[in-house]
Length: 238
Image (tube, rainbow, N blue to C red; front, side, top):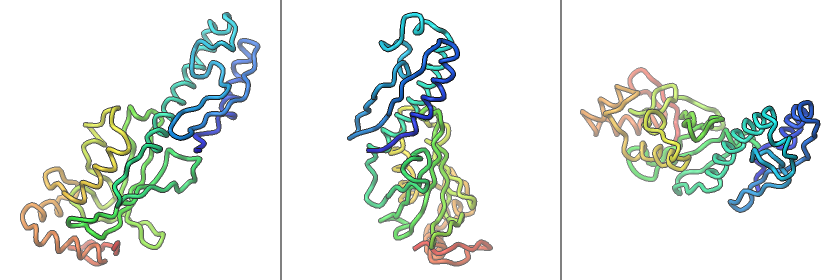
């Protein structure tokens, strides 16, 4: 069972605002996710503008309707994201962690350890920051190599720059609300098994991959083992 957020605090806040307008006080409720199904207990009027627990006059109150609508948007966004998290079907070489604890599911980390391709044997950490309007906006994703609990922002990759920014089309113009976290993780994994020199952030790495794949592979192994590629030092991540 995963606690999505502190609904009681949100209810208290909304209830206090509503009580001043319609002379009512919301009862306490709890929102939880159990075995992939959303269970709502005693949350009157929060997910529906029409609630059996409210009188007709209260249901017609425009201020109350506005508060309900606003809260509903936040809840639906959280529900959508948390459903994605519980339904993740990650590749065997990928793992997920929550650095802020299970109460904060909007910020998490995915570790990818490619088992094939140029980057086989490496360990790459991606931080995810999920927008409050997800899935209508893609999560923010950055790549950080993880070495002895210290983060370094240097990865030798044509589609990842030296600040950890990631060039993946579904994180930008090709994002659609029907996509999800699972789609992004598989896209990131694919970047390591089939890097794309035609859509680069690191132009030097892209040019090397395109013009001299053998030298590119040598540079990748050298960078992952800890060493310089050109004037840039890369920390060991294997």
